[in-house]
Amino acid sequence: MNARVLVVDDEATARDELCEALSDEGFKVTGVGDGESALIAASSESFDVCISDIRMPGIDGIELLRRLRDSSPETMVIMVTAFGGMDSAIEALRLGATDYVLKPVLFEDVLAKVRRLVEGRDLARQVRTLRRSLELVDPVASSGMIGESSSMQQITKIISKVAPTASNVLITGESGTGKELIARSIHDTSDRARAPFVPINCAAIPEALLESELFGHVKGAFTGAVADKEGLLRAAGDGTIFLDEIGDMPMSVQAKLLRAIENHEIQPVGSVRRVEIRARVIAATHRDLEHQIEINEFREDLFYRLAVVEIEVPSLRDRREDIPLLVEHFVRKYNRELNRNCQGVESSAMRHLIGHPWRGNIRELENTIERALIFSESDLVTIDDLPVPVQGARPFEPEDILNLQHATRRFESDHIDRVLEMSGGDKREAAKRMGLSLSTLYRKLEAIREIA
Image 1: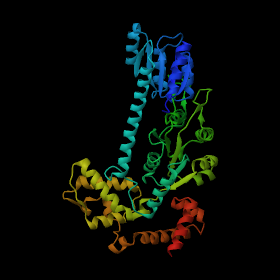
Image 2: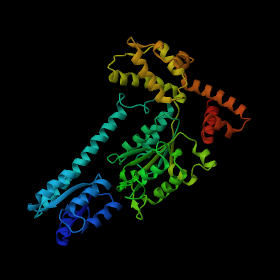
Image 3: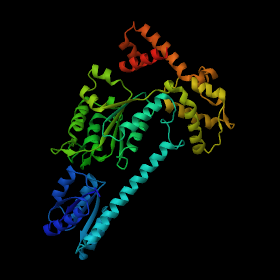
């Protein structure tokens, strides 16, 4: 097993013998002689299990348990006590210890307990991973990854290539296009799937708190820091941290994140010690980071660290051929959640759904279908069940549906030509008006030329 075990005992002989027995079984073991040394070790390395004697000078086992519970909540603690110290063992269990062993310690007993704890934790992680994997393939549980368009097939291909690597990934695209789902798909199909997937929305947390959330802090670092706190970059362990809306991250935090990615270590707020991190970083944004770099709102060096692989998620307008599949999926989903038995969508209503611009992308489409099932009084969703803006959309005709990709490209080509004309032929200005990066505009122009 690759589990990390911390052994804490002020009796050197007992400590060394237990460390040797655990090492022989394949565990990665660190042995220390007192509670203070144990806390220092736990601040720089994540341990799966801590085996601690209860009675020690200075910081005893009970106090060590309390502090580990705050600073390293994922560490499972086994207490070692003499038969006469059962009251202390019971107190330790009440405070959150996972198990206890009695002196004289039988190595076979300790090894069996550690194996059981680690295997139980790994099994729980496998169950969570399996559930997420089932959600990705179950049409009733997934969302944005549904689609047979060429753009979605390309994204699936990129995910299969990048998932087995340790490379950082930047996912770009409009809000509501399913960027977090793609990040989860990368994590769940990688060898990190058993470890945590830790998402954080950089736009939703104030600057002062964002630094503490990412990097952690020590007790007393600022007003309200009443205990040590493990940052999310460390809490992710060997897993993945997903930094959503990275374009809204303040420049001061960007600088610290860059150092963390480059050096694979962080420095908690108020601490003088650096702590190793092993998590993979996946970031996402709806903003044009290249434009933000130009106006000095995003670090260019951080951009290149994050965008080792860049995945651009198309808007729903750019993959209208996937709308019928998504509609079918959401009908099944809300049949279950609303206890309905809707059989689908009438063809006229579907043409309006395909023709609607969907500025809110998949999130807006999902809300629309949920609303339609709430108000529908028949076994088919009709145009009258749709919101007024969708009813007013120009419906796609059957011949258009047969050639959706070309129709979309024709519309896109006309739109780009109009915006370029309004911008005096300035491609950078046209890209800004359309909410695209300059590189994206060039790719769209190349695709239009190929079709023409």
